[in-house]
Length: 215
Length: 370
Image 1: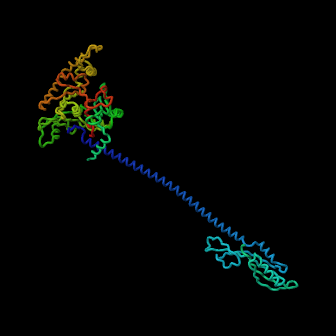
Image 2: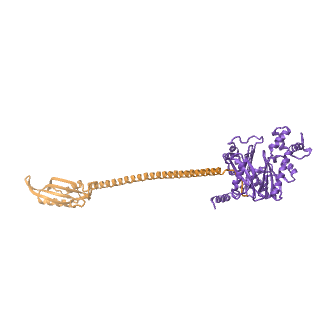
Image 3: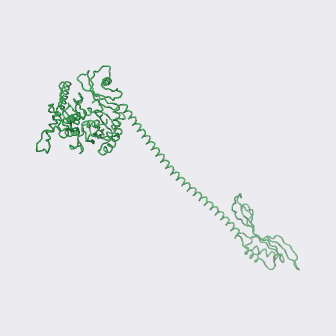
């Protein structure tokens, strides 16, 4: 059969077809828009989640950094305190005055009597390398903020004795006994002179005693 | 291979049974829908629905009523898709046979339009016209069955269906649907040349199909309303009562008195109806004989194999016998169910058969996407 009657007007059919296409295109655009919107919302949601996670991780990192810095500060403080402790230990070090007096007492006899006695323990900042070792010992000073280069605290402990002896022999004996004391590093006779004393004469002398450093 | 062909092949693969369009007949107080499935050789009924008002009242009081009437029912009764093939209501389409001689320099459609313009009162710009060539004996003299409908009515009808959610694929005329059904039936039965008498409510027509070709179409001055009018006038009863008498008693043969209850014997009523409508049937028989003679002249003495009755007259009991007596030819009521295997229980013999027109419409596109 080659022909069937169809009374639908061609322009009406074309109009319907156009409308149908427009409807489909509209739906397609709507679906596309909806899909894009959903995708965008998904990406935004994901980004938001990631941002939140990033912020959290950054906060954790900052906290860790802060704790690390705090720890570092504490370590530094500990180090300083340790150094100060060492300094204090050093300051407390050396021969005690009581032992020194006992040593002097052991060296004294009835032929020698003291006129003046100075016991001095003092320190001074010097360069790290000591220029003399015979007169004290060194403490390494904690580095300050403004100090440049290592500094050392040199501790000097010595006595100056002005005394009188009945004669030079008594003086020599006294010095020998004094040098023999373990607390004494060295003894230097600074000067001697004979001076009249009461009805006789006495030898007046000055000694510089260098006390031995840390035991 | 075009995109449409590919799409069609894909749809066939996905849905081997095919999704044929819904056949739809819609007139004032009756709506019929039928959907088939399966192959063209073995179509099966997928869904069937008939809505009518027995009291003759208007089924569709408003335009929106069709949607609310059909929407839920289509889903419930198993219809698939909304593609529809329908026919213009008979009252809104004018069918005519146009004879013309082909001139070498004139287009056939243009020639037919010119002839139609002479026979319709309104300008052709306000009409929708289509035609179906009719087989003729000579090559120079041709005929065509032309359908003319007012464009306004066509658009109104299409918009009514569109508003109801239906997608009209084709708007046909009843003889075309009939031809499709007859062709389907002639595949199963050895009856190739058929005369169909379509007795409608207000209008009737004769159509002769010669094999696959339509060779004759004639309108008759006959119809149920005409018979009812004559009956009610003669028996002095209301038209509604006349319709009841006609459809209940019709033209039944005498039966045994033992079967009868009180009141007048049914065969006496039938006999009275026969007598009253004798002249009408004589005229119809005369028209049929003329059509047969015309057919013989056009087919070099050929004769039709059977006369089929369709339309509202088939509701008159034993009407086929009245015509068979006058024509000396086998006259049968065309049962569309013979064209396909009813696959649903409700389409068994107890259910009202779908009309031949809706069956012919539903057969369009069965087994293949149109």
